[in-house]
Image (cartoon, rainbow, N blue to C red):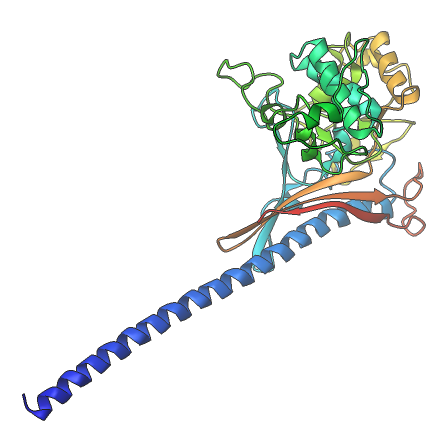
Length: 393
């Protein structure tokens, strides 16, 4: 072989190697560019999600600033269910959506889809002793027998208290303290203080994944009453009062207690208005005190004053006994209310194919409310505090 042939072969090999090297560099550079773009979009989605939460906070702020938060909180308000404000809103090169399923399962297996903030006071607070009592009633309505319900409710109280003695919710001893948890295959101790996160309840004796997240507990192949799970019915935030304007049927059932099986349905049917849909402009509201509320072009909102004993017979057959039960839960037991102060924002932000889900629980420390409207300059907006923040990875 002459020198020219050898040079040609060597040159061909060099070109082939350089070509492979160039392809490799280009491929890696392309991956790095895509990864950089992906990471940039991830950052964008986080800030778009924060913008969505901020939009909801501003809508709530406006109520106080304009004197419209008259000790009433309802999903028919602008923060509660407005698609224009919270459904697939274009922002910053992407979009955000604030939405949640209100756990009223009468018409849907997933509940009622609403767009806006979720009222945390529509849930049962397991950090409250009154809430634990409601929780026990909830379990009874779910089909648990009295001993099972008292045992789980007692275990929740024992998880929070500082002593190491099992308490009783009913007449018999129930609950669980460290002796039970230390006997498990993977032992641990009770907290000895309030629940810090709702998922912590999964550590409590008797609370299974199916009870918490939902599942076919009785094995009949159908997700029936009480099998949708506790995750959307419980909370660890707020003062422990349940808002009669926003609480789902199952929570109200637990609050009213045994012997008032039809009362929750009567309240919900009245609350839903003429169209029968929850969270719409014709929803009827409950309040404490004689208040007239107007929603601009949408007209007056029908408001029932729970201090007025004359109205109960006009609301889907609510009896005097049932009305007295509602009044006692408000005035004597301090369990029910018509307003709130803590809200949950469930926001999904999207940029191209990147998706970010953020959940925040926000407390509004509101100024004193007035019964008259139109004092926007005299009513400062409330201070807010973020009680919980979670980003899905």
